[in-house]
Image (cartoon, rainbow, N blue to C red; front, side, top):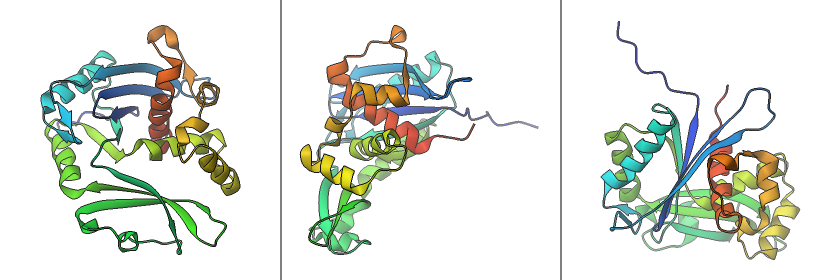
Length: 237
């Protein structure tokens, strides 16, 4: 009998932009009512390793992820990631239906992308506001091949906005009133990160900054993204 390696009930969250790779380990602690940010690391992206959301240097990316997993003894942990960059389509769109399809976007070559919509709130003129994101099919396929080739246990690929929306919902105990979300989105011109503060993050996650450095002004949007990825895919104990 040859038992397979046991997948650890842990989640590593990853944010990848054209300029930076960020990794976080958030985990539930015994005898505490909220998870802890156990590790946090940022790596600048140079040497054309990642451009237009295309991975040109898979070894560069994989080595940093693998080093992070090895250092924290999380070889078989699950990974969920957020992508941002020019080839990812993102917009806030009003529809006349609560069940929009890609065809309702009226975009040229929309069939070449894989789409996801997230309902936000109703508008005053009887329409429905959605967050819409699309990723080119060949780009998603590239990431699937990459993660399989290096044996990473990737659960989800999404966007920073979608992850931050998870953080926003958890701050409000998953009982977000649509009126409040509409107000916040309009007040900050649809920049959800501006509604999320250091205090709001600390309501959800214990920050142990003795183990890593956090720039509260620059890193908060990133940390809210990483926390949202965790809450979206939190595994049972």
